[in-house]
Length: 226
Figure 1 (tube, one colour):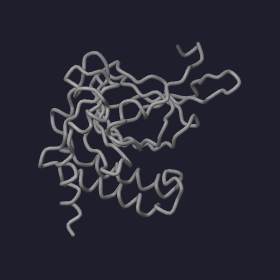
Figure 2 (tube, rainbow, N blue to C red; figure 1 turned 180 degrees about the vertical axis):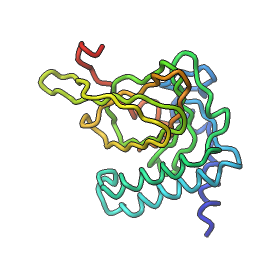
Figure 3 (cartoon, rainbow, N blue to C red; figure 1 turned 60 degrees about the vertical axis):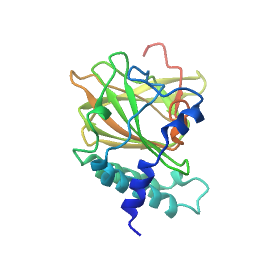
């Protein structure tokens, strides 16, 4: 069987109306906030790159099918990084529409959603000065920087104080890849501190319809960071 053709069909046949019905809200428009999703699916020329990424993700889940939680496997984490690195190497991975930002805040573009609900793939566009809140994750997440430079501040959860404190900040340039598991053992803030737009590719362990509300766990931070 041609696995690339199979994955391409999965992307082509994703019914956006079904996603909207599952969320109980209308489709996100051009001015949507980052909690919403602008759904811009891949054009035909992109299908091979996305099919390869989806095939790699499917293979990871199949290889870890005997585990209670695949994302806890070092194989899963390692394979996810490799898959994103390979996808990010394709300059034409995103269309111009999938690189559009918002003047108000960073924007998510939903690119693909697994029919079994195991993962969703999105592009995030960050204009200069835009950033996420400080957050942990309700699910496993992985990202790769496609263009520009992001700034990532890592935090540590202080249970007695019930808040997070910053530990370090690092530049995440084009090609940088990260994978984190769910929980407050991995807390960070991503943002664009540069003078040029930045774009990142993200894979979340949730169905596409849940990408807006079931990924980030926004946490309180020490007053010194606010």
